[in-house]
Amino acid sequence: MASVAVYRRLIGAQIRSQLSYRASFAMACVGDAVAQATELVAILVIFSRITDLGGFSRAEVLLMYALASTSFGLADLAVGQLDRLPQYLRTGKFDSVLTRPLSSLGQIMVSDFQLRRLGRICLGIGVLTYVVSTVDIAWSLPTALLLVITPIAGAVLMSAVWIMAASVCFWLIEGSDLANSLTYGGHFLASYPITVYPAWLRTALAFVIPAAFIAYFPALALLGKPDPLGTPAFLGWISPLVAVLALGLAALVWRAAVRHYRGTGS
Image 1: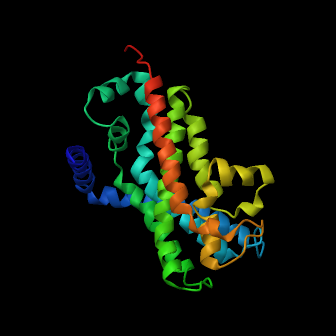
Image 2 (image 1 turned 45 degrees about the vertical axis):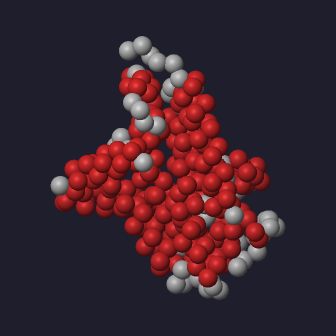
């Protein structure tokens, strides 16, 4: 509990600092939302030429985009600071992290809390709110709960991928490009139905980097639509379980990576 209090104070201080310049904060939020909207524009441009993508209508693809974007925004807010890990390792700053009586992962997660990332989350929630009013969903308590839980489970799952990708940098100091391809690339791929990808990539998104559980499978469950690929319907309801398992695996990978760490001596 003492550690939680320390993290809360560190995040609170950074939030107060960023909110002290409200105009700058608002512009940063808008900038983040605009950057996120480029993928939305790409989808709209694609559907100005076609009527369906991989067997899904524009509204159905937008539902996947909204789920993936909201999940990615929440994950970016929580663990996006891990992008700075290669700098910590190169400069030896990670040595000082290990000397403190707090989790090394937790310290990096709160090291540069950027509230402007709320812009991405707000855009995702805005698109999600619009699109659920345009698609045919058989509303019930389970589907309503699924709609609420899916972005949270997606954020946990995306965070787990982020942690495992960042852990690669302990072995490959210049592994940031590889890590970014898994995190930002995974988010991009999750925004579209996996039916548009070749078989080997569909398998990877379902069982290696389980990005299909962020938006594709839950969207099928919300729409009550069978998977054109013939996968079982229950996959759309187990994203929280997949997310918990992935987070547990990420914790093990991070612990192994930290044990592998050798200081630079600087």
